[in-house]
Amino acid sequence: MLKRLISGLNPSLIFSSIFSLTLITGLSVKSVSAQSRPYNPIPLEIGREITDKLSNQDVPTGQGGFSRDYGITLKPGEQVSIEAKSQAFDTIVSLIAPGGTTLAENDDGPDGTDNSLLFARVVKPGNYVVRVRSFGERPGGIFTLKVTRLRSE
Image (tube, rainbow, N blue to C red; front, side, top):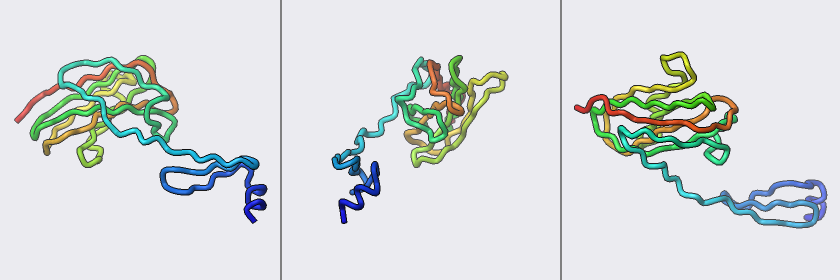
């Protein structure tokens, strides 16, 4: 029976657990394990502009583009501006709360370019994520990112 299953499903995937799978091609069977890379956003300092590169090695967005995350600690009452600029791709910047909720997002800034400018006020203290991603199916490129503290209560 297994032989009939194999011959009818050439090639096919059989999931043996949530983190591994068995790939059947012809008469050979190979087990493959998923990467277990921990999620660690890149630390980001308020007031310091960084230059980085978004590539197809970053996290796929599911919409053809990619994203890169940065960690930042914010206090209650802080107001920040988050600016992402690139000549290589259309940036989208998001501020994500410690629980994973997207608090704010911006695609195109007020200057009429594809750069992003986001203003946000934080209510709860914690470790937030600033996400930079590309719009559409562009893989990315070089960009700058800066978080500026506007006001702290």
